[in-house]
Length: 263
Image 1 (cartoon, rainbow, N blue to C red):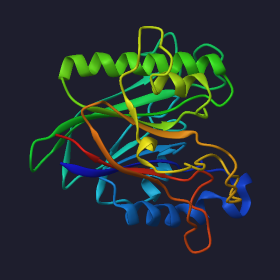
Image 2: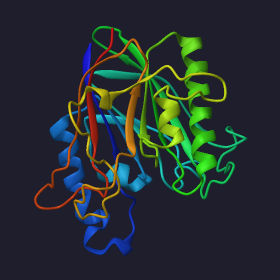
Image 3: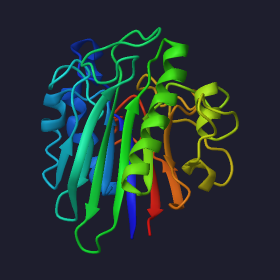
Image 4: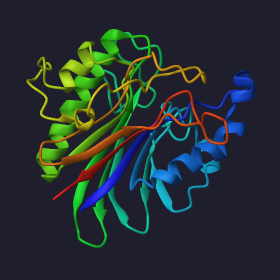
């Protein structure tokens, strides 16, 4: 089966953003998402009310807040409910105690999480795993240890379910940093080499930026938002969408999309 997937850091809801506050961006973000019509959407920085206010009625979503329950920001996974069904989902914390809600790890400034979902395509029965995360913006050790924990969980769940997988999210790391080098298989993780592919490899020429542009449209920030897939997933194309919607940026990050084929 072929499908489009998207990762989108939507910038959290805070009145201090002034003219860029969520209330002014919500419908723009929803429109951007609908124009791409991803079968799978991973969001970051989204609070529970934001997830509801998007009014993406054609989707269901799973995920927990980083302080437990629906508290604080989510790494939600949306899936098109007419096409896909949820088999299992789980959220764990990027810490030395990953099953302890709201736990912080290493030098992390905040609790950080990863949500995963086991999804089945209703029509043809294709099954796959989706992992969505947001690594810490301050703690370098937390980012490295966090991505190693995520890779360990991907391996663990894949071993149990024997399914292809994708990992998406805001890594707060540019390609020259250790987190991305680990994910690209350029250097080993603590328990060996990662076996996933970066969808950006499907883009010819310079990739540009996906990073936090402070609603300025700046193109100099580098890439920090990623989608990785396991080897059996074919990446047909990838794109960073840097458009404004009705003159407004839907977020301070640009969404990343990929067209995938899963067999």
